[in-house]
Length: 186
Image 1 (tube, rainbow, N blue to C red):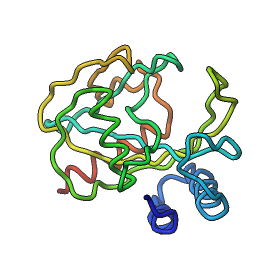
Image 2 (tube, rainbow, N blue to C red):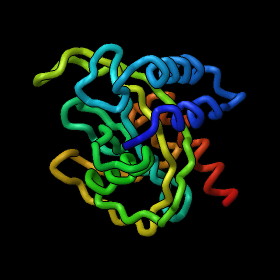
Image 3 (cartoon, one colour):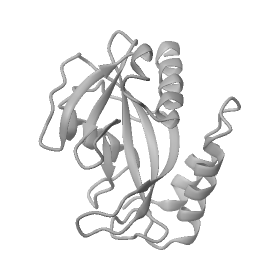
């Protein structure tokens, strides 16, 4: 079972002096971890629940994976809900990346947190409007092979000059910059 206190420490230690936009998301996520009995449960809608996303950097270190999300009909990073079998929070992001893209990832015992973003999810199926408190982890691809699955319509490698074409939110753009910086320095 994932420990909320451990992740409150991870979330509170994340900072980027060049990005003032994430502080709101960071505070909302910390409040969720500290004051909600089941922050990882996808059945918790008020105030929402934690999700995890993977930002997968191409082997050339010049692009990252984006997926066309079926339900939201837009380009995003691969990710999803925490499952009871996920022993560590970043394992959720790794599992979702592989499930959605088939990407082969470089083994990494502890991927870097590269972003925090709280965003709204519209009502659908059996879910009301709610918030996803998203942790974005950086991964490196071992190869450039990716394949769409039943969960996503398309998968693509996105270079910085493609960000506008894919209409990527600022949280993804800033997370990509952090991931590129950390991958280039490792």
